[in-house]
Length: 387
Image 1 (spheres, one colour):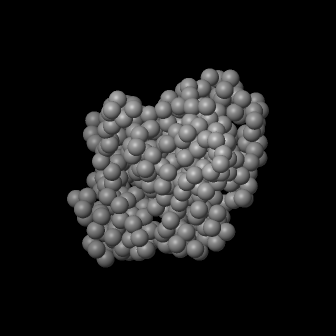
Image 2 (cartoon, one colour):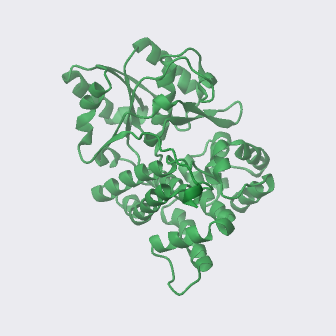
Image 3 (cartoon, helix red, strand yellow):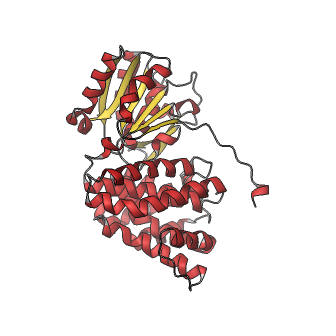
């Protein structure tokens, strides 16, 4: 009942969305109060020349900049430590995260590390820090992670076989620049994987034990957009309307779980699995999401019934339970349609990993948001069904 709920919606970043929105970067840097910028990105984007173009634009506006392009998929503490050396050397500035979720996540850690002592795991968000972080500007070049909508990032700890969260309230991006043109060059497979990540964000937000009407409004809208447009942009990556639809949908999905719902069991399992197997996060979620929906079904039948209606797979003559099953079947069919794997074994997971992944999944904080509290046996069953 809404009358029994209490909502606290944190301030959200200012969004500059649209074709050529990237032209507002200098303006955004100035509005943070700085005339210097550290661009955080990856080698792949550096090879495209985009970071150099941005640096030239900043220079013309009288803004000094430097570059850290050591971001990799599933970034770990080594990447964080490497970047913080550059950040501390460069000094006070705006942090500009250019790329997918990995770049934005690491940038949140660097924003804190630049002005606080410590290294690596010291920047776990639960550890108190002496100073708030540097202002962050996020420029997503993939449509999926929603990392630009919150203040926390996911970092890999290979020694512990798990991921941990960096960040601080001060690392909520001040500005998000979402330019669909920057996503056009993304190949089909990562387009599909990041899109499935966005879909998982929205579905877990509307399914969470503490979901709310704002999460529903945002989550269902994002789901409808993603289900309609993701197959189109995977087929034709130059479809600029599709790219625009997906980029905004991913942002909306991020705002859905930022209403306080958090994520859920699919992400709780995906985090340690990616850490152990080195798998692509979105590809793992594509496999896990339908299985987790089946686990949640008895607590979320009406939610999935509404989901079936929003994506156009509901039968008006069927029961809510039957339509909920139709929704799950439709989500289950998506990965193969998008050219993604449908078994975890194809993504590097093995049966002997299941016990440790299950234990870590139950420890992951996002699992606490699941509508049904899972047991180790439940997680094991989910993993065995798709290994």
